[in-house]
Image (cartoon, rainbow, N blue to C red):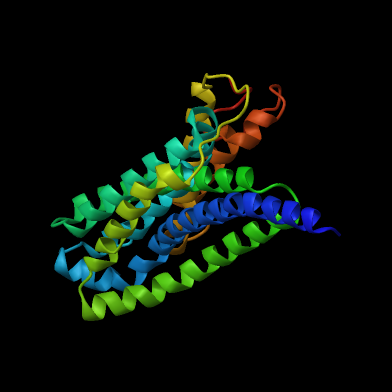
Length: 278
């Protein structure tokens, strides 16, 4: 190889390097937001007794601090993903991150049980908006093959690590700082990520996607997912064969994605409705 060829190759590598660095820099920012939202699924478990005593929670309502987050998080994931594809993934990522960060601050400042539960639900909604958008951005940034596989492997590892870290961090923060700091911790991290997102994360959306929503389908699917998550979250308390568990599950299976994909002539098995779904 001539010296001219070597100089040409070096220039090409230098030109490619910034793009590589930008992709992984954006991935790091998205991973921080992902880590933060998954931590919030588990971090409150250790703090529940302290939160219950400080805010005078009725014992039967204390689990709603966890359930409210899981309910909106699991129920609105599909809606958040579709909105990100149509409206812009970075835009929805930033919107979800802003909601999540603001709700975290409100949780830390909560003085009543009802307000904390509502803000936990809002936190879950923010997570449901930002997470599908973040994963879509990752899939869009890395081409199919070894590079994308590497990114997705790291993404999966981050999720597993976050779930464990939430339990450990929750115990330490409650013991040495106070239960409010399990929520305060999200505020500076979320604010910093929000400030950097516009400069670091690329914008993308579905090419040629119709700028319209199937409103009825979105409401149906989201409602079915919310009922299903509710049934699963209540099952350990009420029992897997209890009416409060089985009724939402059957409703979700009847009116959810599975029923919409089936033939319109298939009879509905819901106890409140017999015949063909409208």
